[in-house]
Length: 400
Image (cartoon, rainbow, N blue to C red; front, side):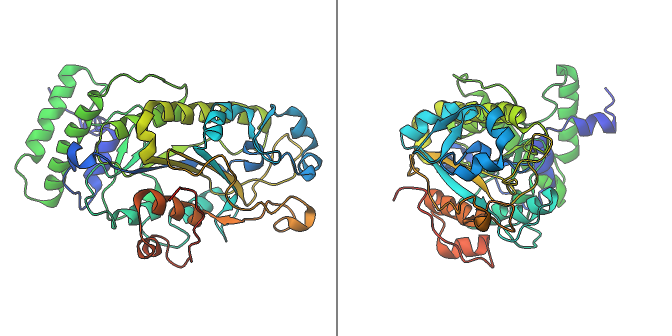
């Protein structure tokens, strides 16, 4: 069978294609190295989620004044502490709040970030500096036994946060990795033979890296296939992605850092309806993730983060525009949950940033650094290398 170049390239799974371009791929860590691994899962909400709708401070009278139309159209708020509530789409997370596994960090944002999606995302993923490496990639330099599966992105591309010199793996949101998984058996076998011929004996760096990539893909594919069927399968792409993250963690592949991309949070128009769908999917996905992990949730911390928030006042099209601070969720077995961690600046005119936005009370780097230190045990010097030019403040999101 003749393999055309286009068929050959499209036959590459997203994860394998990413591995092939990594310049210094390490050997596969293996399942034994993964036993007892602590894991941080970062859920990136691209598009700037409206934190004031996600975690509405319904006890602040200024909220209803600023959003008379949205306040009437949004679904009911589930009260948490008399001042803050959960958007009803996140109802599946309420039991975790009551069980003190879920904490909320209000008024989170990257200090100095612009109100441009791409510029703010890029700056956040670089850790607040201009760098060729992302903050998550810099974490890997401080992991003592890092392997091919230590850092995993779940999606179709490698996020900017994981770009850099350290190896990272991309898995499709449905857990696929390897070569031509959807191709008919004859074509897949032909592509596999083509890989064998290309890279079996080469001594150049690309061939060496390719052989390691193929070996890692085989190990990971087998480990995921050996997992029992999921007990819960939430609908939608974020549900699929977080279920794959849970399978990776259960498979003891040694994953310490998993990045999950979600989109659709840019709500200039028709925000109430869009957030009802989006937050409903997110809440079910995170709850399903926790259920799937079971006792392993004690070794995992999940944190949500976005490039910025949205304006306090609604606009004329049933939405909100680009703002500054937002809200973040932190969930895990060791999270000091059932509480609001951090301060809330308030929504009165003189409390707003530039007279229009929720002001930042917690820098995004402080939140990420706190989770990394509490879960993976990164030292102060490690965190300084991960987030240079920023004096980190500990928040106490995790116990101990």
